[in-house]
Image 1 (cartoon, rainbow, N blue to C red):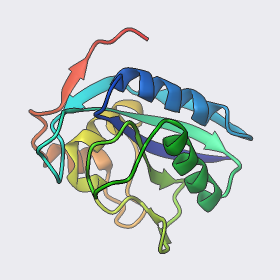
Image 2 (tube, one colour):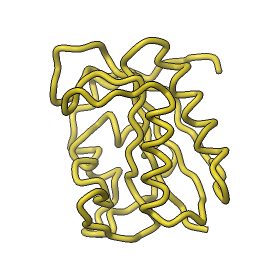
Image 3 (cartoon, helix red, strand yellow):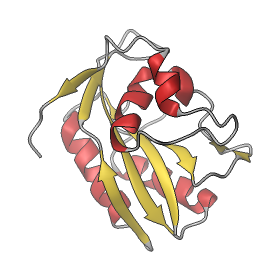
Image 4 (cartoon, rainbow, N blue to C red):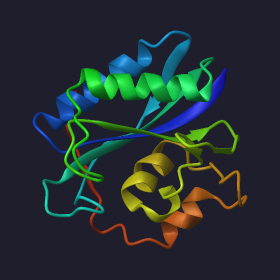
Length: 163
């Protein structure tokens, strides 16, 4: 089994509901088990900023699925939860990004792991470090909590939501 870390976000409709459904769908994948889920965090949109705030979380899972199969499964879950890709960084019902796939480094057309922007995004690192504060970047050996200490986290608001 490979330990995988994902980032999930939603800024349309029932954001919490979409994230809960995505977590359940991920746990229902064959030979896959969700091991940890962070708290919910609300953040302003990144990239294309003229849109609703995002609800974000990170999760850890263990899987026997190959990385590319997991990617296709994540994209299918997004589609099943009404995600329509209109514009890059645009609003979405759910977004699932593979952050880390074990300690592997992937550079393909469709999959880049570690996620190329994760060390620059507080909305990714705050929930990730919450569930795995000892993770290191397989490319640099740098601890992700060290990257986080260099970022402004004031816009990442932890929410106490009931499941």
